[in-house]
Length: 402
Image (tube, rainbow, N blue to C red; front, side, top):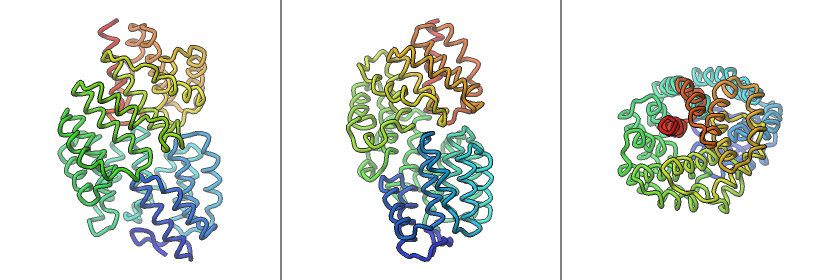
């Protein structure tokens, strides 16, 4: 049995292999049905080791500390494996155990031996991004791209990862070419769409961005919560144009529609919280009244105090708690971040959170004092240049008002 690109997978069940490939393609395409297909694979072959690995990875991809025990259990269940798959299990074990460098080593070993292993490519790409390692993110996918071409069924995914890696490293023209080619190969390629949107955001091309995204929206219906981030990008273009009513409409109906099935299923997913909090903050910095929208995010933040797995989300939790006036919860939150085992959380996220809180309290001198020295290190939080810019905007606002 083989995966999408012809690599062997350790199952004798054709039904399990077929369901696994559907799950893998759904994961690569940010589709909402990935877990359903993975469940079918494990039902067809309960000892399918690589499927157990993928289940554990799905748990870790949520960046929720509560899911880590399930991820570790999945790694332990992954016993029937070939040599390549054992490295996947080792990467998952390292990742769930907090050894992200160990996970990177395993994924890169897989890619050195099997450049067509699109699962290793995508997991490494994702983690390089959220760990603030943009140069390694680009080098990783460039090595893969040099050994693959459009004959590979998943080459479009390689191109979309290449596009985003190029964009985050300032290679905008090459990024746009790669992203557009990925979308030509598959108009539903959300990651390629997202990479091109980032290029247009960084180059301040809001009308191009709205036109580009508008032409592709019809392909987004099967997506998981990542679709909210695409709608967030559309709102980012509207905010550049000063169209604040359009931004609020997108907030309520698209990327933070609290009654939607996607939000109901995962109401506190890290990327959704980032989208929502950063957009409300951007609007308020422009003098827009956002009403009571902070309250429900603050509720989620209070429930996640002590979970520092996604360091870039931490300043966004702080934004919500401070905006909602949750003084006691804010103090507990800051104490928990300070007690984190993550050096980046303690040294970068914590002062950024304190700066956010100081800004809300209108202590602008303190905001500047805390945030200005962080500028060279903000990239360590992960996230994109466009996402982290909200922290820079807070600093600039404080500088003007101090």
